[in-house]
Image (cartoon, rainbow, N blue to C red; front, side):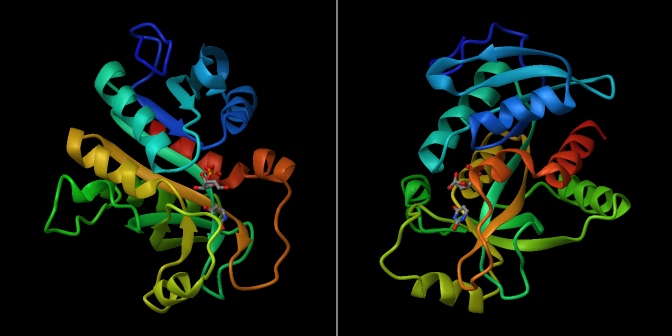
Length: 235
Ligand SMILES: O=P(O)(O)O[C@H]1O[C@H](CO)[C@@H](O)[C@H]1O
Ligand SMILES: O=c1cc[nH]c(=O)[nH]1
């Protein structure tokens, strides 16, 4: 048992999917896992362990933002020995040729968060995906016929901004999309020698008027992303 996770030792698998939304964790467990058992409900941040194609795997909600995912990532790796962590999240599209429902692999994560500055006061650390997971996810996505984009994403500390100018500027430097957690996930995985990857589904577009997905769609309609994540985790 850790401060935010009530699982007993051994109840969490060494590979895990990490959605921000705990109800997405429930959906994944109920839809894709066999014999799923709920191991966490502290703060309603649901976590489950079951099997996928005969292999043990867990899924844990992380909440929104870098402070929240950092708590779960620290506890999962340090207290439960998790070694392979795959975030399955939503994001806002930045590039004009990115569309709602597209799936993105985050190779790297730029951030406006200052959390790494206390560790690296004079350095801009570059949070990076694990190459083995990235490569597997890309080829599994291609095998499943899913069109994938891979590149840099912004892990933002702020969802509602007065101005999107800085996001537009990052778009000019190739940033594909905006979300709120990956830089912390990749940094902590690097710190502890674990493997991490973020897979994102575009839920809305920052600069075009493409329709936003509804909350219900966000919860349930990201099956391409989830399939890639599950297959990557077990292969
Ligand atoms: O859908 P999730 O995984 O929560 O990810 C995105 O959605 C939330 C904002 O609505 C942030 O957590 C962002 O990163
Ligand atoms: O963080 C996020 C997630 C989805 N859409 C956004 O605009 N930002």
